[in-house]
Length: 310
Image 1 (cartoon, rainbow, N blue to C red):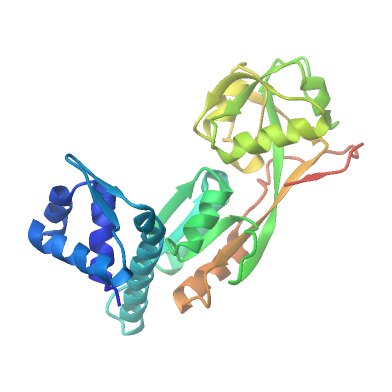
Image 2: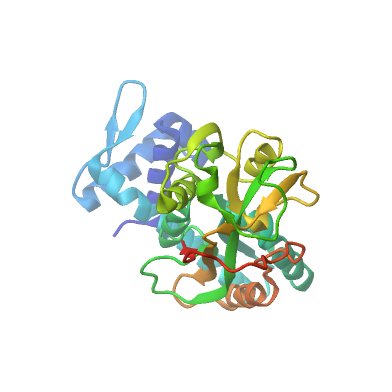
């Protein structure tokens, strides 16, 4: 049976790409590290690492085992923290995973309320560009709880927290002008857009929205940062679509609600039966999450198209 120490050794070698660097980080001798890796390979029945002249590379078996090793180490760390919390030895650490739009807009009031109620509990926040990355991280056991879009095929507890809405951002002097009417996205089909970097969840989302109404967006600039897109759009580089949650206060731009409306359900979820601390955090999320900024007014005109539910 592989040990947690062997898993730790495998993960460290894989992350550093070197037995020498891994041994230094783990404070063990290189022969001792090599011995444990060979013992692990014997246990699983095959080579896990290719020893190259200047580096180390995972074999297919190593790549298959690595995520399970990471999950086992994460589960063990959380189990230790939960046990120490239970006997009052420490406040512990809550590991929270989310996507960028949620960490920018939804999470701050939640974390403020949580910190006030649990000042001795540290929060480690893991942020991801794509909901699929968030889901994979949770499935691998890298966090205690997650906040984001509804995860597919999830067996653990899920707590609904609201519906996220998306807005179009334009410069203040845009010909579209301020209006209480919904903005037909097809009117922006000939524009060059502030887009998101490939692999970013918002890039996939923006392409899907535009293609749903009949066009492929031309690109003026791509950004890696969720918070940057509305600022660039307000500066006149092109329209963009973003979550209403990430609009900064006093943005010098024009906000228009799109037609069709664009929404996405947000939830908080955990793996298996959550420990008392994680369960308390899920309660705080359900009570304090503010999914739509109160200062953004709702459109008054009805939509002419069916809502795009992401």
